Image 1 (cartoon, rainbow, N blue to C red):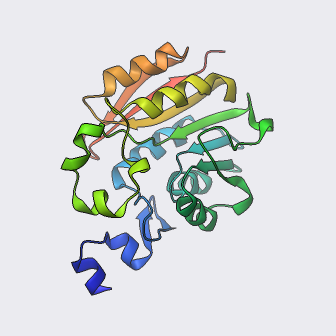
Image 2 (tube, one colour):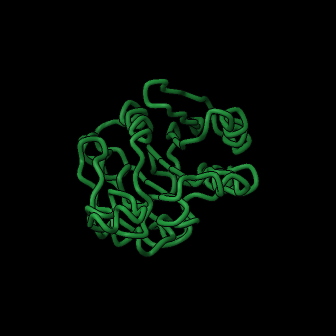
Length: 217
């Protein structure tokens, strides 16, 4: 384990878990490591969720957001999806396996969720392609590029998530996604262009920025 860590492998992958919102999240080698700043997104989602809420976590990675919401929201019905098979294997250890799906964004979700989702979280990759080379080697070497690279301006995946959100959200349902502080105005515009009522919230303490879009109704 010391040899692996000294070689640059993320500590969480070495020991096999990451702490997140008081949960111990299983993290295997090659899987995106949950960031502590993303706990702010969870706190925002909890404030918006009612007991029994239907929650979907896209780009779920190891399932940290979904697991935290399942623990915090009474009687929550949590579903999660990711395109990476290794991430899905981890998420199925952190969430009910029957509610974790492998595929591209909404594609693998059960059709019965359409129009019923109260909380849709999507911690999409948002690093601009040209900035990938400036990331710490722990991320560049040991985490999948699909979990990091958000395209030219970092918002390619968010645009796809936002475009599909109105069909899956219940009236009054919310989409929450993380972004950088610099991206926030454009990310807010992306959600608004999809027909959502958009706003930006930030946490200086956690160094986090979250864009929130509400389906009118």
